[in-house]
Image 1 (cartoon, one colour):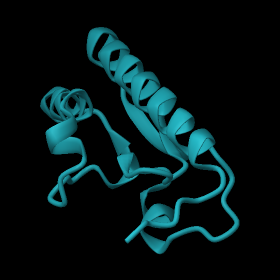
Image 2 (tube, one colour):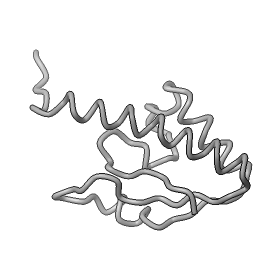
Image 3 (cartoon, rainbow, N blue to C red):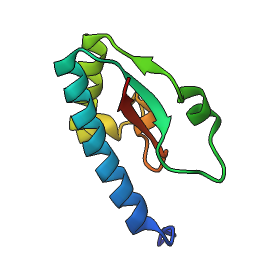
Image 4 (cartoon, rainbow, N blue to C red):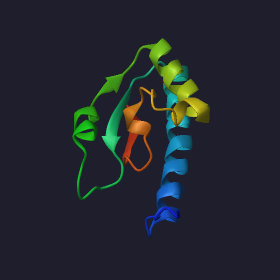
Length: 100
């Protein structure tokens, strides 16, 4: 049985990988500069998921939380696990982080 792949799979993977590295850099900077991060929509979506809408504008500032988020983004086994608590890191979510 062959799984059907989206026609834009290359773009989806490229955006997801770039975004993951970008968020890691933002988290490192936030930890280093003692700043907060905020979740925002980085890629437009025709049909936004309810979970994504709820995450937008959520901010994180506690160093231990930022460090935990960074560790999850660095570890693919955790990141792609079903128990991953970082919902904005799911593939093709369109969400990212920015300094706040």
